[in-house]
Length: 262
Image 1 (cartoon, rainbow, N blue to C red):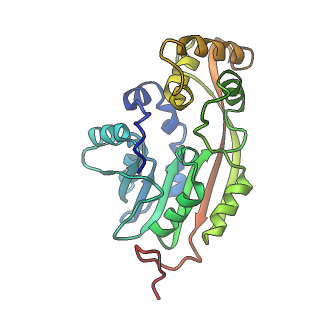
Image 2: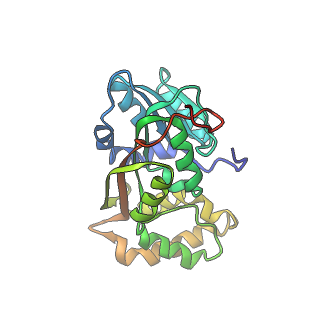
Image 3: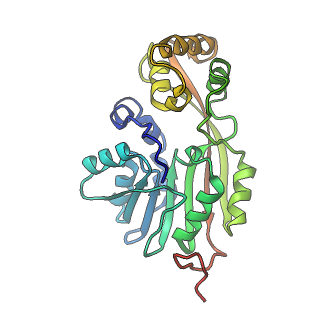
C-alpha cells in the first residue's frame, strides 16, 4: 500500500458530493446481487452502495485505500465489513462471486495490476461489474487543469472502452456487456459548485502549489470553465462513463500464490 497521504475528505464527499454514488445506485440492480453471494465492493468510499448490496442479502465486503473513507464507512454502517487495502495487493482466503466497483477504477492508474488482482479474487464464472470514467470524461475540466497547472500530476486514468476490454481479456475475462454514455451533472452549490468539486477531487493537482497560491489558480480555472460549464444558473461537470459486466468464465480457481488449482 502506498504511504502517500490520504487525499480524501470523506465528510465533504458525503456532504456535497454524494451524487457520485446516488447517480449510480442503479448499478446495484445491474450487479443483481443474490442472497448468500460473496461480493467485494472495490473502492467502496463511504459505504453507501456497499449497504445497498447488503440489503439484497449478499455477504459484502467493502474495500478502499483511503483511511478517511473506510473510517466513515465503518461509522455509517457498523454492521458491515470494511477493509483498508490497495486494490493491486488485496488477498482473500475465499473467492468472491462478484467484484463490484463504482467511480473508483479510474483512480487506479496501474490498471493491469488491478484487473489481475480482481481476477485472482473471483471464483470461476464470477462476474466483474463496474462503472468508471472513460475516455473523454470531464474533458473540459481536464483541459483547464492542464492549462493552469501544466506540471501537475494527473491522478486519473480514463481509458477507451476498447483499451479496458483488452486489459480484461488479457486476464481471461469475457466481456458480457460494455457501454459508454454521457452524464452531464449539475453541481450542488449554484456559485461555488466548481470550486467545491476542485477541492474534493483535485487535491493531487495542487500538491506542488502553495496554500497561498491556490485560491488564485482555482479562480483562473473557474474563469476558463465558465463559458462552457456554467449555465442555467449553475455549474456542471461533463462526466462520461463506461459501464460493463465481465465474466471470469475461462479463469481457473487460483491459490493466493497465483497458481491454478488443478
